[in-house]
Image 1 (tube, rainbow, N blue to C red):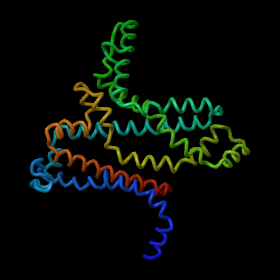
Image 2 (image 1 turned 30 degrees about the vertical axis):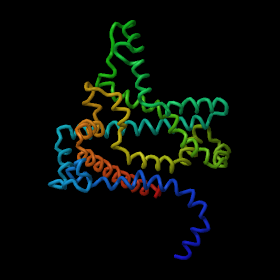
Image 3 (image 1 turned 90 degrees about the vertical axis):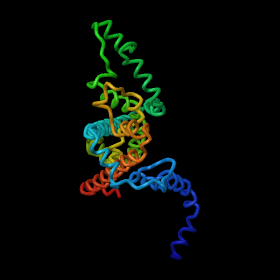
Image 4 (image 1 turned 120 degrees about the vertical axis):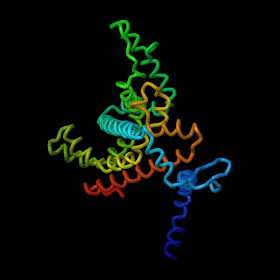
Length: 302
């Protein structure tokens, strides 16, 4: 114990720097976990968290969600949209990072990188306004062209055939450059000696990407994949809630939007908390499973 205190005192400056981060997680991440008990109670605002009666049976609110006629479609929509965003969020980001790394003109590289990650700072309200300007059935630029050239319009935002593609496409456009930053940083950390050795061996640009760049950032790719799998049930509430409408509920209604309508708007906080706990447990299980698979592949992340 004495050695531990001695080591802590020796590195006290580092621990002091760590305190704000720890305070943030304790206050906003671990502290609110105590409120999860209302998932097992018939929560009443007037009676408070401790004064509210326990649910009978204790899994009452979980059962209500499971028996909802929308349960299967909500789960399917959430997983499918999350899977699309996972695939189209990672692969293009890796590709953009590799292309930026390969660009020799530093000025052009900086311009491309800056332009590509600026949309990340736009709110979904602004993005939806831009989508409406292009895809609105009545005043959208694309529909005006279709009407002028072909004599018909397409209800992109009210069609179940197009809406998921619009969700994934706008998410890709908004976060493509931002997701490429960490991959670009990882590529920059690959030893230049490896690229030089590949050049001496006669490898071309594509060969160096396949045999040096991608293996060099494999740990980062696996780590980010594991972290994103933990949010597989978070399909993007902000984006979907702003962009969806009653016409596309069959393909766009996810767990979070249903909870907002059925739980929070009706002040059924216990049910909303139960579904949140359900999502957290599934996400935790996915993280453990993904990490286990990564270890089997030789990627010991944790």
